[in-house]
Image (cartoon, rainbow over all chains, first blue to last red; front, side, top):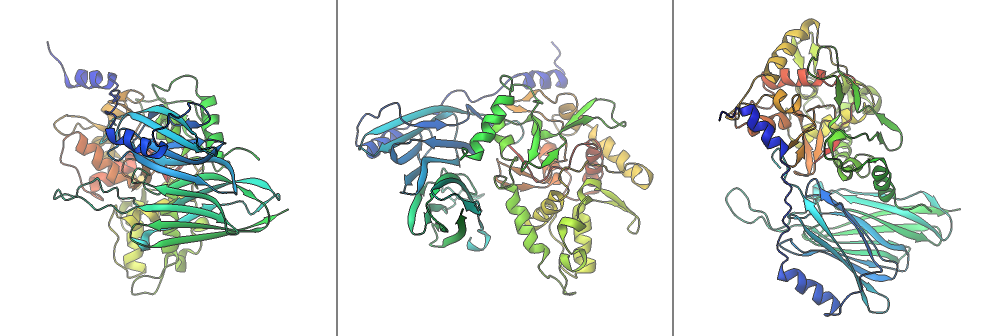
Length: 138
Length: 109
Length: 284
């Protein structure tokens, strides 16, 4: 069968090459989270994590965290070489216990936000962010 | 590095007493992660902003620890309560020991 | 008080989106700082046969990438604009002049300039890009060193000059003395290069809206240049983008500022006649 370059191009264009297979969750991520929670099982409510389902570029992924009862919120990326991303501590003049920033993700993986609440308990939210492998020089 | 670093903050000029305002901050910084290698295969040393704080009249609003996973030109957005007229102080701490500070005054109506 | 602006922007974008944006362009509208209306869709200029409607590359990007361009504060490309504002006022070279010495405020004197470049320069007898004009000012008026074509100061300065024309329609002249350069650029646009034997048109005319691996192919419009790329986390020039494209065809590329790229820039700019000047834009 003859396959012209144009055919080959069209075929290639038809394929979406999302890196759908998540990076392996590193033991380091579990350890970093356990070090923060002291091993306590976090509640799965009381914190909201907003992140895109698909990130066009892993270099700049916008995220927001919001946890009204939190004293501190830590963000982890469980597939990054170094899982810790940021730690937000809220002072008396924080109007809401929320913040937005932009983060780097090495590939498709879970972003995990854990809040340490005023009463010493923990709350967790996590979301898988698919990181696409770009087309041109991506 | 220090000469390239420029901090920008966006704070409303006025607020109602006890009201909530949104603050945005952006500092130009490459945030070299320490994970990359140069053309000769040598690891490029980590060089990041590692901490950012915002205070109002000496009281804390937010204190952030940054890791290398924060993107180039670190951006933060958060909300503050403004109990009275005064001044916000924003401080960024660089791995190389430099500290960058910005202040913004706000009035209340 | 209202919620954070980012959140509002993201929600607004989400509300406009009808389902997943798997093929571009989407139907979002670009208004920068709630005041600068950007034309991201227009009838194709008469000289184009292959395309009826032209679209800014912004329309092909994901919601999160689009959101970064809605507010200058959130657009990291504006760091370059601020840097250039300082350079604008800084004396450099043997003549003791800054840009401001002749051109006063960039905001008024440079308004509209980006929209008509590249442009025929009668005295020089050549089509000039903004970079060529800036370096001519630096060497002949200021007695200063040339800037590198895609160097930081140059790209920042083109970002400043572009930023003050945002919203104005691109309108480069392609007839008269510019015509032969334009024809040359058109020929390059339709010539296949490299081991992959791809022309600009194979991707950006025949296949815009399709996926190239995981990326939406745009029409390759340059109305948003210079462009802040999330991948490189810096502003890039048009010629730098051209080099990346030609390299991806596995060809030896032309150089920054080469006659080939100057001609190609004029031709590609003319394919965007009618879209707004948008730079510094944000792309993935």
